[in-house]
Length: 91
Image (tube, rainbow, N blue to C red):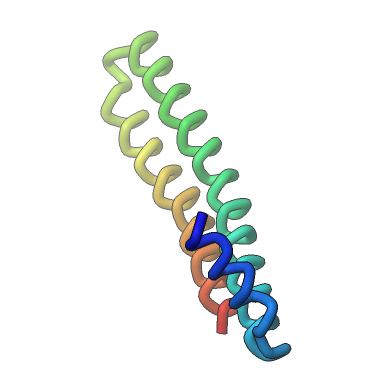
């Protein structure tokens, strides 16, 4: 509890510039969290459907696997773009 009271006291003495930096950092973290949700769902869906396709037609597993990895790479690029935006907002 002592640490919490120190944080509350420190927050009251912050300058407007420090408050702006704190708000920017927390907004950037929230934005990256939202940006990571989409690719996470997309990759999960993609891998699930690929496994289903490989189970239905094992002879096409090589082609499905290659296409799956390409899809994962493109979907992961969205998360990396979100991370770059996170860094840019934080500056």
